[in-house]
Length: 194
Image 1: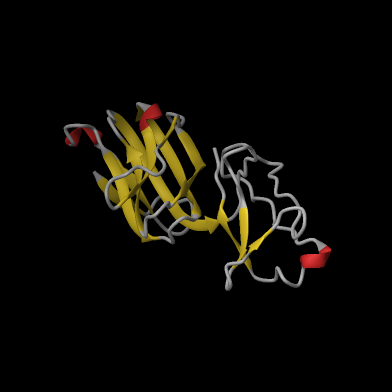
Image 2: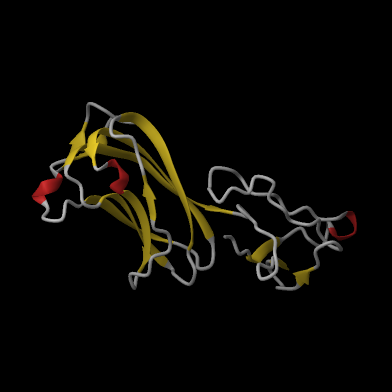
């Protein structure tokens, strides 16, 4: 049902081929990896996928769960039935979780094959910042915890590439001249997206 395939890979010498979905009574075929994360941080998960006669193609899912099974990012993809390597990305906030489980695969599969390869998880910064009432942004000194003021200490944070996907880098925090030296070490404490 799952095989190391040394004849095809997106990168490197092998990938994993997933097939024979009906061997599972529900048609499930998926991978899971558990990773440690920092609570209340934003992450981007990327993988590459190749498909061959995959049915149904609209059942490919990437899902991130915390230890208690709470879903942090369920995303379904309508992938092509047959296609070469394609890049799939999602973003998720770890909320209060120190550990997450990332699943990628097909639920309710009937036939065909798919090859997942090159999984990566990276912590990202202010991607998809949406500015409105109820979505504050707070910038704090990483060591002392003191807050900085937008417009006085740093320029307004705005994401010109806001698209609710995670295929771009977020905007930088730009210290204004009067506060530049004081803001040498900062981190953001709250960024709400969506």
